View 1 (cartoon, rainbow, N blue to C red):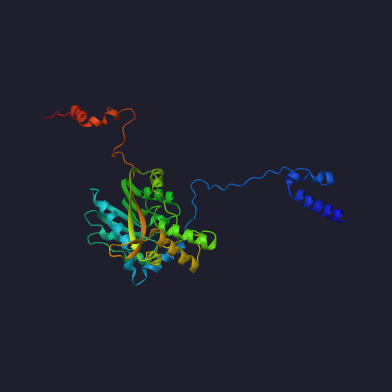
View 2: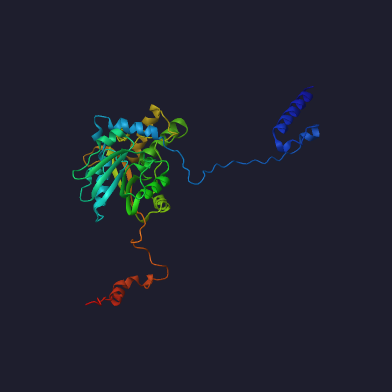
Length: 367
């Protein structure tokens, strides 16, 4: 009796499986001999590829707007501008290296004027300040002698007249853009021929100490990890993105700013004051106290250092990628055609002698 009941259960189970599978529709369980029949089921994993020209919404732009508004409305907002002010000063110094006066320039994602307050009238005649935060836009500082216009423009929606700008600059704002290739193309479209695009963004090595500490602590305390540090662009990808956006004569370099904090909590507090806290869509909204304490201990153990006066601190790395690109123009220098070289690389050790022997003096025929 037990054997018959068992067989009936197995039969009903096999019948259910067969009915659920299109490939097994013809295999019916008529007896015990069919119970041992082998059914080959072909399975496949669907792939979800984004169509060309589309983008992934990694960041929550509305959350980032709220973070920026909260930061700039704080009474002590100036205390947290030290990184952006330093990078803005370094970026503005690169503008002075270009020996021309730009008639019309755009500060894209200007924030509180970290770059604009260092731009002089000798370099720019008219400056357009844009940002997604109205309060930050109102607080942006500029110098006298420059015609200033302020507009609320989201970094992901640059709508401006084509071929109308001589210079576009951006300081630590584009790393929150979901569609960075599309943003670069829009910037290129707004520039005049021989126009310049200059920007500074956070690189992939930014906050790697904090990222690693949080991941180790969360893995140990909760058995898994969540994205607490937003993804940043790698320097190896910037060149290809600018080339795809039709920029030429690229100049890309990187710099690191290492800042010491008493503990991990002061670092996280300052990031919130800078409006650089996490804004990823899949971010975890709550972090357990035990995980935070474990992360702080791991951070101190792995990366903690001591100053000359004996004060302990933890370093935090901010990698800054500086990029410069030009919109093509016929007057720009172009590389020679392949095969036109006259000096072999194996003769580079005697390059001075080759240049001396091949120096030619052109004589003006009119004189």
